[in-house]
Image (cartoon, rainbow, N blue to C red; front, side, top):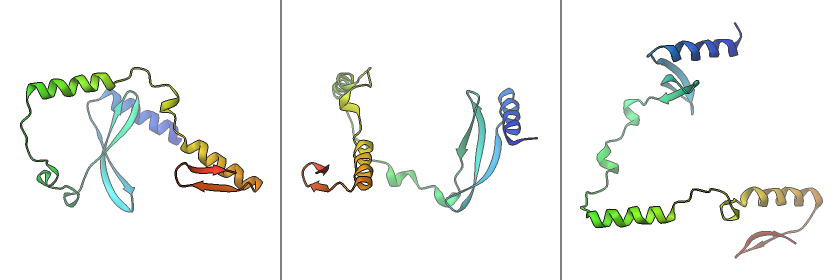
Length: 124
């Protein structure tokens, strides 16, 4: 049976049951265990941790602080004001890919690259 067929069979079988599969896999040079389940017709791997990988939550637990209902309302108002429904626009475009493409083109054509401390890399 071909690999795609086996995977499809696993997705269908796990999708019809309430069970999960235990998987052994290698990640970053270590053997790991995980749970495999089906979510929206896709296999999802949930990594399990070894005992030595789990930290005491008290190490990262921030100190407790009391906040008032007015402070919470203010925080909610701020998030409402800063929330956007539209995630398009020039202000949301990254420039790293474009800058890297310019560097690649410059290397191809022997264009001089100047580095400006305030504005980053530009082509001369």
